[in-house]
Image 1 (tube, rainbow, N blue to C red):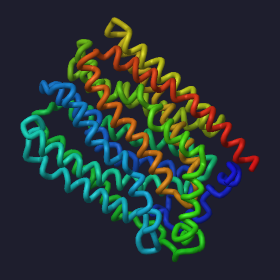
Image 2: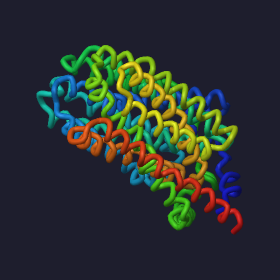
Image 3: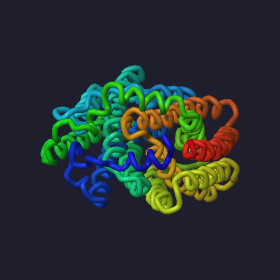
Image 4: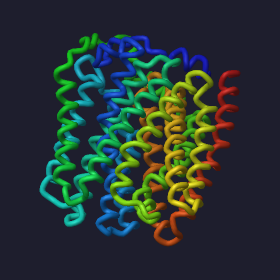
Length: 425
């Protein structure tokens, strides 16, 4: 399929058929809907990826053990590609994306209930098991939300929608991280109760809102089943562009993922207090990531997502390297804040790029697979960062992440060349 043909086909033809929310009918409505959905998506991620490493570090847990826990817990997000076909093929007039989201959020809330009675550092294995189950349910929710975003968002809005979605997700992460770090690991039951409360609130929004009823399966929704689905999947798997994007997604985020996984311990090593780290998550991190995502989304819609992703990745690598090498605390804070801003730009642009290259019949399968690959990048980066920081220090660890990000960029030039070849065929 040529790029132009794919883009024409990617524009939603049946926006109201199964959006789950009537607001999805307008650009402003779509921005609001996906901001809220990704806000709910970001809270458990913020707890697992941002909060726990800092709390466990404050409690004296070894950095290698922290890295191992984070790498295992994020793995369910890395295997979202296996959930995508279930969502694509199982959706019908009676079972919508909304149903998948509601069921997944129930699983997320229930998996946290056992953690109300334990201390994080006293029962590490129970913590690990519950978080793995929670991550599996959260990954399922992510697939349904991502598929809904691909289906209802026109091509020219995808950068902006991804910007608002990332801003919502990051706000969710930051709210949980700032609150949890502020009250400390000793109040783990309060942290878990907060998470469960927000998930229940999300459920109430789902259950009380009455969007338009899904119509019966039509030709477009029916094309997701049977031979049409298999042909689309075969085409995507045979395309070299697909595999260039896979390798890029698995490596390009290494700079920020290593920095983010070890940020709490790293800032502790530079003399930061828990209050200082909580303040960073509550303000500079949120403003940087959220503002960067909105900026990156707007620039992507105007100048093209691939080019903005390249510039964003270069900025992430440069600021991460700067944070690793500066000697003073003030400059450390400045470079870390700049890295979060650059990451917001890169994230919105790269996600818009993945969405633009998604085959319309594979809304859940292909886009969720790409999101899963980015999560796999987070997993291996966290594991490497935890072990390398212990043996070689934070400076070498973050410089390695910056180098991996820069090395991944030539893949996008190969992607552009492949797109031109596809257009000519």
